Length: 200
Image (cartoon, rainbow, N blue to C red; front, side, top):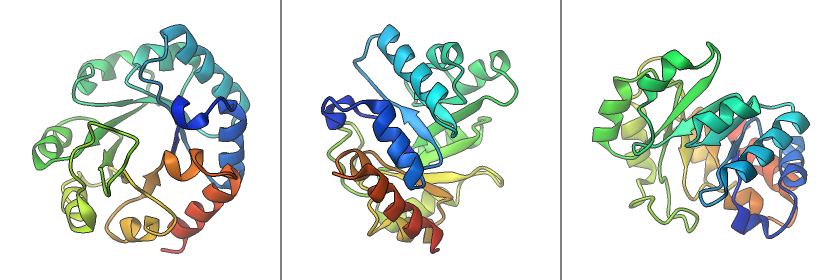
């Protein structure tokens, strides 16, 4: 999963960068634009949904995800409760949740989340409120708490060099920001990550 970040895009077209990432092997895109206006986030999401053949998720905003025809929403613990949203969403609408502590894992286990995003796995400059890095052992401990059938993905400081270790530790996949968006060649960067994940 490649997560958008307007700062790291540095004026480049989000659709073009994400299309390159998908060509390189990215299988999902998440629109994260914390200070973007709802109208701008909606426009970006609609453009990505129209242009790309992979599921598009929206960070935090279920309303924008629905309006844009996105595949789902990724929620944190300050967002509307996942299980309060579930009855109002289409049957195939994905609801993901962030997990970074054993307490959050316990709360997530009691929810109907479709997947967990566990992190930060390693130090990351791209999320100031991410908390201390879990490391491989910390990630693995939280991953083991996920209900059977609920995939977990690793996030935070993921690179082609450490992605396979996170999958070894229990991840179904990884989510990245800087590893692709900061790369001079997003397609090649995504291909390297996909190769690392697929080798496991």
